[in-house]
Length: 381
Image (tube, rainbow, N blue to C red; front, side, top):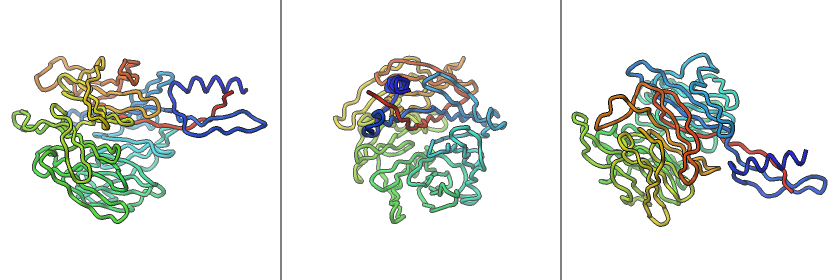
């Protein structure tokens, strides 16, 4: 039995991180607790304009097992219109479905759906419309909505624990030093973009505006600073770029431009591990992965094979592996995009050095990727 556990430990070490000290017992083996990635999940937005429902794709990094529409396979129904985000938290998976004004609650082990959370019932017709992004902290779900609020939802009974009024069309969020930061996109029109800063202890909300922030979408907290993915600002009639996006660093209330140019509007194009931020430049035309070292300030290009029209990026925190979601290539490539918005997309999995490990299919419009991690105890000599 001990020999089998030792073999199991060696298999997991390639895709895991040690998280606990030795547990040595005179009558038994030494053990380690190891954090492993139990599953990879892709939220597919579909295409509501053409009547294509959203879906959930699952992937095992160990066996390669893949289901492009796992939610429907388990629950006998589609996710509905425009799923936009998802997280694994505790024993549950939460999926934000923008077009249905609800948050699906799934058992993480079986993907069986329980009673969903209606953001309209929770917040009302105006403030509950179009839930966008989600994060979890200390037993609460924080959900941004296009109604201009962030809802704090208690995970024990899914009641509304608190509500915070933020800016116009809030998108991504991040937590830094007891404060919840919110990217108010102003729907990409450049009229009222800002960041909201919510003090989670007092409930006070502060607004930060800056000339360098015109179309914020995704936020990351790294090393005491908050990093803002600034999408390109477009002319809605001609699609010409009015203002190039990039990466912005906010320390205190000071905003600094650290990377400029060619960032996709509203896409989840940023992820981080340790001191390195990964982002996608020219996502829909000629996608390139850039890295930014938050300590040295160095910007580098990481060549990633097989990108077409990248729509999201994330990094597995246990392995350092990089996952990039992409639309398939359209038969009619234009100067603005080469994406096919009606065809199933795909995900590329890279090792920490950027070498392609695997590719697996997704549903239509892959838009967010997240991981479920667990802990296993293994013995060693």
